[in-house]
Image (cartoon, rainbow, N blue to C red):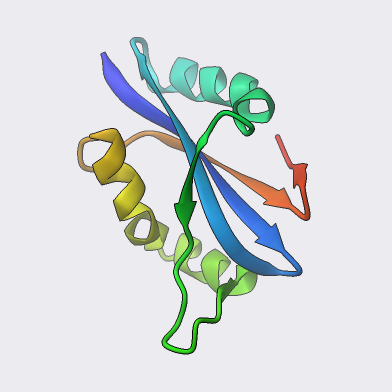
Length: 108
């Protein structure tokens, strides 16, 4: 069994203002686990646990465009460290990241 996560980026007016996460213990191959998470993404949002989004020294939230740069470089995992600790996931966990833009869950 592996702990896997649905993680939500809460985006308001182009800024990442929060995260939410829901964890599962699941068996199977990575493809099946990702499908499992995607199927539950829209429904999990309301029951997911809320986490703070990073802010700069002036208390400003990160622009989504900056998050996208982190993601392209594979550095977005650093922003989820509190989520990973709280959920007790191993290094390099399997996650599904879903943006929630101005209240709408964008589920692929």
